Amino acid sequence: MVGNGKTLMIKTVSANKKNLQWNAHDGVVLCLDWNVANGNIVSGGEDCTYKVWDTFGRQLYSSRPMEHVVTSIGWSPNGESFAVGSYNLVRLCDKVGWTHCRERMKSGSIMSIAWTSDGTQFACAGGNGVVAFAQIVDRKFEWKNCEVTLIAPRKLRVQDVAAETSEDIELSRDRIVEVGLGFDFLIVTTTSQCYIYSLQNLNTPIIFEIRAPPHFIHICRRHFLTLDQINGLQIISFEGRVLSTPKFQGLRAEFLTKDMVSLSPDTVAVVDSVDTKNIQILDASSGRFIGKIFHSVCEVASVHLNQLNNGPQERILVYADKNRDLHVAALYSGPSAQGGILAPPTYKLNAHVESFSFNDDTNALVGIADGRMIFWYHPEVAFADKDLLPLVTTSFDAGEYGRSAQILAFTGNRVSLRKIDGSIVYTGSAIDLPLLDELCRNSKWEEATRLCRHQKSRFLWASLASMAIAKKQLETAEIALAELNEVSKVQI
Image 1 (spheres, helix red, strand yellow):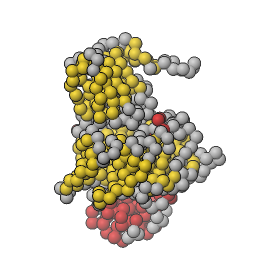
Image 2: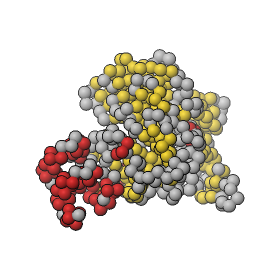
Image 3: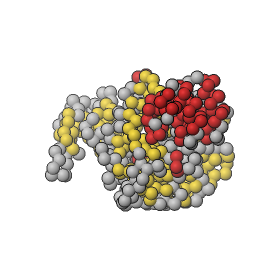
Image 4: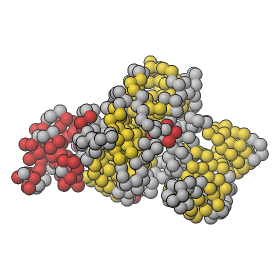
């Protein structure tokens, strides 16, 4: 990757591929950095702006002009943020471009930026000889009514918004590197230890030693996952016991981002860092290789597993490729071909999906595509009867959230989003769906039918039909399909 005047160029090492070049800035490009983990490029120039690009040369973000030229830029190793240096100024920015904070200091032009390997600190070299050190603080994590804030390098503040309570956790030994929050547990890792807190009791954590700080943490109902340079992937129980260390040929921890790994109670999905058209499927409890899904169109960018705890037979995977096309696969319902290639049924849900997430209690899926927010309340119905998929799908205009809005979480019937300016907003989904799902999971089909009759909602009837077909409750499915005027299906 090189800057040439006002342009950026990706020089290829393959003889049969052409170099990619595009106009990047209105002035000379002074600095750039290419992140190994997320594959994005950030550049700064004499036009006093910094810009974020993907590997196809598409602009993802452009800042407003600053007071002075941008003299240095540096990605954090995990690809979650980057630092921008200018005259007497340094900015910390999110990976999508918006600014977390800015700090003014008497350093002259910041000529170089270097990050620590764990991504919690960086150093800046100023033109007048000053060397400044920065520590990342004020990171926020949310799950339902709980909010956790990193207020100091060794101190966390845990707030229950509903109960209006607050409690501080202060560690005496090392600085905090990574935090995971979800499913009533708080996971805190330092440079040498891991702390497992129950949100019901923050006074007595489970503590054990770790060999290296993790790049990120994923949490599900049964256990949590960490990824570090030494151990690679690790599945750890909430008692602090390592359950498995999933491995496969080509696993490169430095090339994986949080979006390229997904965890469920029984399955782990990992995008192959060597050939990113492959998705490796592994057993969570044993680390055993189950198989891999090959996506022939283009490279896979992100994967998500549903979180239902009903066993692997109901496990579904949603993944997006570099073209931002969203696909759903039923992992355990398809044949397995020779060589470990899984051949589950797959279905393309939508094109140009910028961000998506599963609900933490149901199979409901939310995504943002073409300026609209879309809810697929039962995307797995595409494998039973694809004609029902439009009936379990709703959407509305999401123009108010702006371009490149990111879905942070989908818990209960609340969706949290981060807009391009960094502000967090909330929206809601159908409030009846979690109740309907609970009734169907408990085989209370008569109560589920009465709920649908009371609400008189087509998507509730369609959801009931899809769940009844999946559970082979033909009488309930017949009632739901009749309410939807699907006469041909009722006769069949």
